Image (cartoon, rainbow, N blue to C red; front, side, top):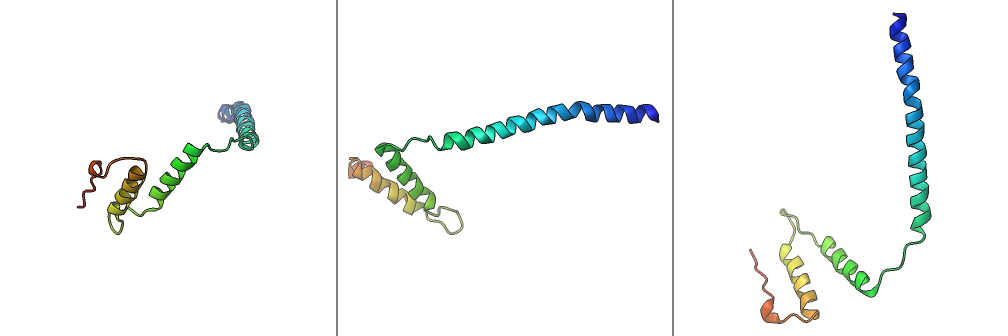
Length: 95
């Protein structure tokens, strides 16, 4: 019995330094993320436009049950047309 308790205690004590290193690493990672978040560069005009288009797509409900994928297709067709694509090149297929 005594040998089993020694083994159990030995394994617990050898694991503790690993956990300490893991917690230190996690704390450093969180601190680094918090510090570098303040140094984020502003978006360029193209990136801001892409983000706005992506946000528009995400906000359109396209689920099978009640969503409307045709609305998303029309929104993207409008953006493509505004970018210079010809009307003849845009085909929206409605199910």
